[in-house]
Amino acid sequence: MGNLKITLRDNAWIRWGMLLMVGFVLAANYYFYDALSPLKSKLTEEFGFSSTDFGLFVSVYSIPNVFLLMAVLGGVILDKLGIRRTGFMFVSFMAFGALITAYGASDIYTNGGWGYGFMSSFMPSYSPELKMMLLGRFLFGLGAETSIVVISKIIVKWFKGKELALAFGVKLGLARTGSFLAFNLSPILIESPAGWTTAIWFAAFFVTASLIVFMIYMMLDLKLDRQSQQDGELVKSDPFRLSDLKKLILNPSFMYVTLLCLTFYSAVFPFLSFSADFFLNKFGLSVKESGFISSMLPVGTMFFTPLFGFVVDKYGRAASLMIYGSLILVLVHTCFAFTTINPYVLMVILGIAFSLVPASMWPSVAKIVDEKRIGSAYGFMFSIQNIGLWIFPILAGVVLDKTNAEGVESLNYTFTLIMFAALGILGLLFAILLKREDKISGYGLELPSNSK
Ligand SMILES: C[C@H](NC(=O)[C@@H](N)CCCCN)C(=O)O
Image 1 (cartoon, rainbow, N blue to C red):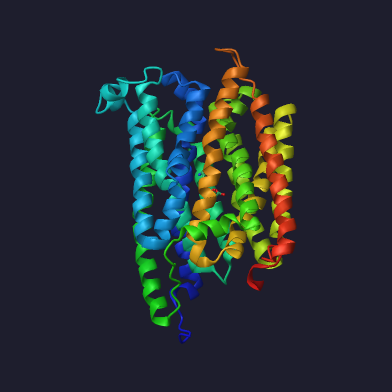
Image 2 (image 1 turned 90 degrees about the horizontal axis):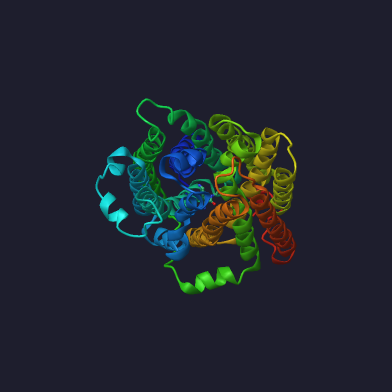
């Protein structure tokens, strides 16, 4: 046992200050992910994107995470190389990918800039703009998911045994601030005198700025490691073994939470990507107003996620909250499909669901899995989740194109929404199974954070 010396993580100001820093990196990540969603109709107007093309653009983010198992590999690299080197590498990928995406939409490129000729030389049914933007988003996705794994590990490192669920809640609130800004700023920035692509360039520069902020965090991290090393408190990760992954897969609680993660998030993120266009078409609103309604979802979560995080820390009940969140998700999608209930209200209610589940899910994983394996565990969950984030935006686009006649004035989203509601029902089932399993395996998901 080391002598109990005070380290940086014992200072609440520093602990929460560093959370703001990594929150900035996450906000930039989420900003870029959502920044093009309110621009769907603009992309159709400028580059002739169909709904399927747009779905493809959203989903290519997930390809490195599904096919190269990037989030798992990233988690393994994280457990091996540590937070600083892994974080730097993957936030750099994010920034590079974001800049390439902006370049793909820029006048420099569309007027025959670098790579335009090459991108025009194959698969002529896809425009050169779409192809360059797909490449950029692919690279962005390669960095973005692993960066979230890195940041989750950073939170566990600084907050385990303290306000862990609250910290996860605040971190998610900050991430969602990025989405909120994206849905509101992008429709304004397309009107910039410098041209509509300002909206995309701004997003790319935001991500680049987050790389600088991460480099500042690296200094704090180094200092904490030095202190913890002196105290013998440094938690070192064991080298990754395939048998560990096998152990995770054979753990029913871990698999239920992973499957809930897949189905629940597949019913939210791909929906959010299409939501601004859905409001525009169903209610005949402007790009600005439909973007604003979409941003009600992140707004709700900015407040509710930290609140539910606090509830989970203090009173527990994480497994039950995941059930309630999944149930609300199904009800909201069903209302979107079949009613004309005020979309502002429904988006805020969806925000409650989208706070209940993440605020209880991510800290629960830290109860089910040993801290030494947490990087690989989050990485594995993200890779499985990305299967959904890859398939469902494409399916949503295909269903839209197939269920609407070409050139129709307003798109009908009913079948797309039925698909999202069905995913919600599956999520509800996994949440119920998780709670039942917890009674057997005894991870204490229903107990407060500091009781485990
Ligand atoms: C923490 C969680 N994020 C994820 O699950 C990411 N793998 C997907 C993020 C895609 C959009 N930025 C969350 O946001 O609740």
